[in-house]
Length: 248
Image (cartoon, rainbow, N blue to C red; front, side):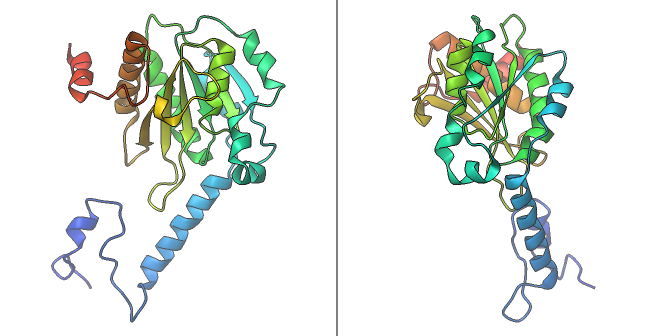
């Protein structure tokens, strides 16, 4: 039986999910490490190819109104092969959004992206945490976007008339986290916005950034974007200022 004294890597493995000090069996990995790697790879593949249950998300968000839209990628296989189609709405979705057009301060989009598991696990608690922090602001109906990339939020925000858009999207799965959620915030959304005009919060999952911490950062960014009329590289996260809003 191997004890911690026999394994100098045990203390480091207890502090990280990274694969370190795996050992070897001859010129290969030990069987246990190889099997765990294969299981993690399967979880990542399942996350990429899975379908988000948007009906369940809408029910969980009630009574917050939701609007369902779809990108121009008709199915998952096309979405993965043609990223450009995931950045544009199907024409049928535009009238639905325009019917809800108003002077919204913020619109949230839940996009399946590259991990359906991420949005199913983290979108609802994060949205609830944000709503509790955004009293006094006009919040648009939540948009549930299927086969969607980040830039789809630009067209959605423009159609809704929202001053700012926050896209909650399933991040590309890794071999240590298949359910990681990212958030991309864009001031004055419109088609053609560059990635440099967005702020990103990433690694929101059970072993990463928690929902409350992510909501604190996102809501601070939103208020600062509204005050400064910009987002992206001109708007930097200030941890001290965020902490001050929590204690002040």
